[in-house]
Structure formats: C-alpha cells, structure tokens
Image (cartoon, rainbow, N blue to C red; front, top):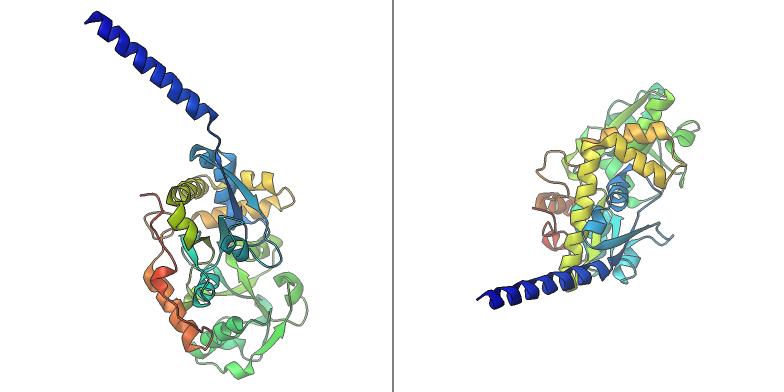
Length: 324
C-alpha cells in the first residue's frame, strides 16, 4: 500500500511538472486589430487591454495597427487582420454586397455624433438648417441624414446648401463659410468646450433610426467559424479593457496618451470621462447589440434608396462571443 502511494505521488508530481513546463513554453497567439482612424478615445479599451496584460492573460499577443487608405475592412476580409474597428453602416453595406463581415461587439451603445454649429449661427433645431451651408465629404448618407432631420422637424431640405469640405475639421470649416458640420460629441464637441467656443449641437440619435452602432468591432464569418475560441478570448480581453476605462477613466486616458503622446492631454482626459458613461449606457454588459437597431437602420437606408442587395440583419452581428 505504501509503495502504491509513493508511486502515485511520483506520477502526479511528474504530470504537474510536465504541465507547468508545457504552459511556460506556450507562446501567445498573434492577433492583429486595425483601427478605423487615428488614435482616439473610442480605442482606449484596446490599448488598456494590451498594456495592462488583459489580452496576454487570454493567451493573445495583440498588435494594434493603423488603417491603410483603403480602410480596415479589406484587411479583415482577406485574413491579413483578425479584427478591426468599423461602423454599423460599413457592415451593412459589406454584407449587402456579399462580403461576410460581422460585428462582434459595440464599442459604444448609442450614436454619439451629430451636427454642430457655432452658437452665433443660432441653429437650435433641424429646421434651422434652412438657408445654412453644411460642410461634409459628399456622401449620399450625409444628405439623407440632413434631409431626415430637417423634414422630420417640418423644414424645407431644398433650402440647405451641401458643400464638400474633405477632411477639414469643425473649427477650420466653421471659421469660414460653413455653418454646420457633422462631429462626434465626445471629441470635437469637448474640444470646443475646452477652447471656449460656444456651440449648438443636434445629436443624430434625436431620430431613433439614426441611433445606430458606431463604432463596432468586426471580424469575418470564416474566423468566427474556424477559431471561435480566439474570437472569444479577444472579445473577453477587450471587454475587460473597456470596463476598466469605465471604472478608471483618468488612468485609462493615461494609457492612451502613452500610445499617442501627441494628443492633447486635457482633451483626452475630458473625452474619456464623457465616454465612461457611454460605453455601456443602459445595457448589462459592454458590447451588447440589439436586432432592432440593425433592422431599423437597414430599413431606413432602403427607404432612402441607399442600400441595394440582400441584407439579413440577424446575420450582420452576434453577441455570442461577449463575456457572460
């Protein structure tokens, strides 16, 4: 009996040693996530998860890359990147065109963008766009959004002037001949406050159909089917990163600033405090998405002649990989 116990102890000890050795030599799996734009506070949770080791604890070595001029979605579709930051509209158009992108998490729960003007323009509601010049990049979606807001408020859209301004920002555009511009409240809106510039802001979410998910994290259908554990690990790490940003906005802002020291510190801190209340607004967990939001936005695009092809809202997103 004693000899059997000694033998069992040796077997268990060797097994534990072998298991520990195997774990120590296992390398984290390399994963690439591509941003949608230059670094900003929409991306904070990703940098937190990378720099605080949340991704590493999930067995991942995550590289965060800037997008090429052609955009991040193509890299995901080609398998050159596993994940990317995108938008509900991009996923909608991609799937209608037969490209199998899927949203796997909503970074922010509500559309935090809208139309802003300097207060001197006295644009207080959408029908006040009449007789004003809107500066945008010439997208049909922009025109449809402005039309929806103006006509929904009883105004005459034909009296709004649409002017392409390329990548010119709010401050430069409205210092000239442009009266209002599409901005993100959590960035340019806060920047205006810090600069002491009074603005009037009309959120797109004023009209429910325009309260869509922007931004979202995306992957290709093939990856979700071939390697669901990798997807689950990535989303778990990202969720921890964004939860940390919710609970510790100042510390999270410092982490983002380490990655992008060229950013204005005061703006990043103020933006992070604002987004701490937006990442998980009115949902039980970060990343959650609702079918009705995808259905409503796609229907609106179709009604405005902006979406062709077959689009299945249920296939465009999944909550499957979010932590319970």
